[in-house]
Length: 354
Ligand code: SF4
Image: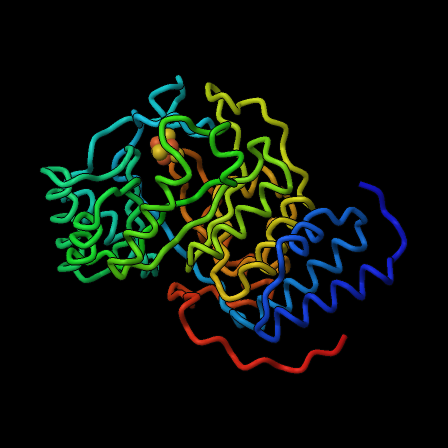
């Protein structure tokens, strides 16, 4: 990347796009791709400044926090090439079956004491069908609801029939994470045991059941900037409410173990483009942030991120929650456990000076 002098034409175009999004308009695929392909450092800083304005306008000064617990670890039947939990690869990931009621309630209790409201229950398996496992999962959600300390969210893989989604909703699931991960074009290079369409269908069934959608992806798999652009557009089309952006943390033993890291500024550029495409959504800074962003982690919020995953990730450690809270407060932002979902009415457009 070369540092160039300030480009007035690019500045003008960025201002036009930024004002359009602030006014409630959308950007096109060509425009999103142009944002992702900006090369000069000065232009990228200009992009970040506009993404920050858009975040501030639609999300205020709140940074939504969320935490997860791994309810079933390792031995997954799928072959996602970035994942430590796939049974196809030999990694150090722990392996255990679906968590018992007592440790689940204890983890929820601890999350509650840390201030958490949403509490994501994540399982490493292909997905859920009708049967004894679904009965057990639903029972666990009902127990958490009854305990009344956290709002149990779910990340339980592929769903193929409406009845399963409806039963999860009846058991108290309000929000379900199911990432599209990457573009439709790149997906087969990342996973061959299920398809992009399996994931899209899961999202459709969950939406039909009245469950909010948390869906995002992971960058650094070897995808192009065009793939990142198409992922953002697919998430817009699928109606995601929350959008986690993960950055590959290469896990020894997986096929992507030797992928080169993405430059920190390129990560920020991707987040900023996502903010332009998904202005009202919670854009959640998720796994791999420390490895890829290094000292620029806090700049993610100035690039348009509005939410942060805190506590440990599924298979890798994160920095202590207190340090994350301090980072957010040092930016003059307000850490908050209650989300501002995309379904909330957007604030009225404000006049913006170029
Ligand atoms: S990403 Fe999910 S579905 Fe894919 S291997 Fe890992 S746990 Fe399984």
